[in-house]
Amino acid sequence: MKKYILFLFALLLTSCSKDDFIEQNIESKVVVEGWIEEGDYAQVLLSSSIPVTDVIDSTNVLNHVIRSAKITISDGQTSEVLRVKNDKNRVPPFVYFGSTLKAEAGKEYSLKIEYLNRIVTAITKVPKSVPLKSAEYIKKNATDTTGYIFVKFDDPVNEKNYYQIATKIDGEEPIFVPSFYGNLDDKNFSTSQVSVQINRGVLLFPKTKFTPYFADGDLIYVKLRTQDKDALDFWNSWQNEIVNSKNPIYPANASLKSNIKGGIGIWAGYGKSILVVKTPPKK
Image 1 (cartoon, helix red, strand yellow):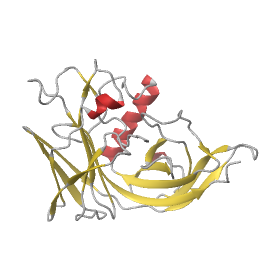
Image 2 (cartoon, rainbow, N blue to C red; image 1 turned 180 degrees about the vertical axis):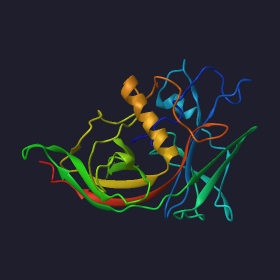
Image 3 (cartoon, rainbow, N blue to C red; image 1 turned 30 degrees about the horizontal axis):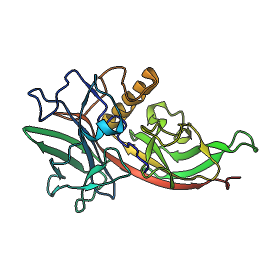
Image 4 (cartoon, helix red, strand yellow; image 1 turned 90 degrees about the vertical axis):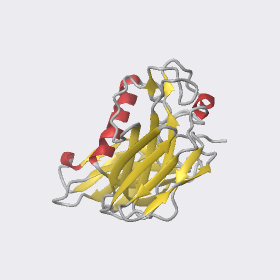
């Protein structure tokens, strides 16, 4: 069974203590990955941080899953308590999800997590979506069997925007994976007409050896997310850990950015635009 992590650092942030929430007096940290996309419902993954001295593998990860918390999402007028479901394609395999409070651009959404004696909170705003103009699979040489994705979009003039590009290969990845170097700040754009090369993002516990490119035979979903500065800072800090440590399971330090009060991680609102890219048949 394929097992992937969307939350690229969930359960893997280090702690100075060997203790967990229940067995010892010193509590580990609540690790949060939560998101709510325009036109969709909230999803949240919860875990407790793994001590730096512990072995990091898929079995130990399961021991740190939190699946009995109460999570409430609110837009200031309407509130919803999320339910939890088992998703065997994810690690951790439990996802809290909403079904009534659908995200709208421009609205703020609060997150409240109640677990044992802890209350964890965060607030995010859903940015307006920016549409993708095109996404194209391009090879360096015609005889190659691999290539990269190039996307184009127009950055709105006189607006401050932050972006994340993510991809999903149909039949191979059940979730969108943030692209490597796919976090963008429009202050770095020389023109409002943006063209970017996309590299595949890093998976933890992958089924096959990681490669930064796409291949013939892939059906690729490409997502352009608009995000706020908190989300940009978080994903950039995670990316820096990968670059510096060469191993995302053991971050070089514990300074990943977070907008979570009472815990660590990210609660992010996103706008979204999705295109599908068909590559040539595999020979």
